[in-house]
Length: 296
Image (cartoon, rainbow, N blue to C red):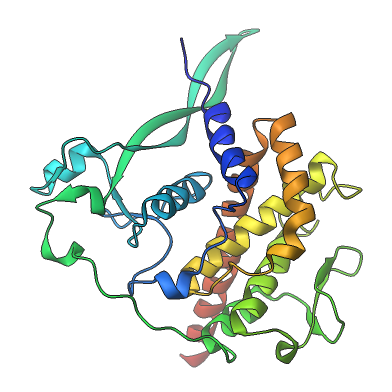
């Protein structure tokens, strides 16, 4: 019998949500070991994306692992190391395709394919560079020049002054409360990255469906997309995004309802979030190239 990976993934995330845990809300600064909080392959350095990111975060959080470095069983052997006996792998997935003939045409049908990875904490005889480092002390109570430059490079119409944060499609701008009104820099940037992810879905950019009312499927998917997008960027910059739980209580209730009604919602939202983040990175990279050209 073939596995239903959408169902397996959704069941795992639902269990965490119902237990009061959001896998994508993490205190990245206090848990940081000096490396990126985004899960990466320890051998290739390549970052995981989409639904694999929160799945790996959840496993690390459950087991108390502080390094976001992962390997397949074979990769550990290729490095002269090994997975310790009795260790259980974490199932992640990637999108593959199958071909089907229909009306004389070849159609490619996407599907999820599973494989297992292990955290470096589950391995032994690894090279010295993978030894766990002591947590790095990070304080983000002031404006962050690098994050501000990243946001500016996207070209977003960013405004400040109101008491709430939102993206308004009609005017195509992001409104934020003043920096000083947030409890700390982490709260400001995690909120800004959430709204910036919404902004990527504008008609002139990735053109996502925002939903017409709080709680409908499209609305829930978009909110999950923004949550995941913010989490991905916060992990890259090392900003905590584990606050504002009370504010998210209503959203969590609707996310649970959405995931229970459609097992594909969470995977779809994570994929959208990865596309949104890559879109923003592309804008930032293009801005850097332009800066270099002007300097030359």
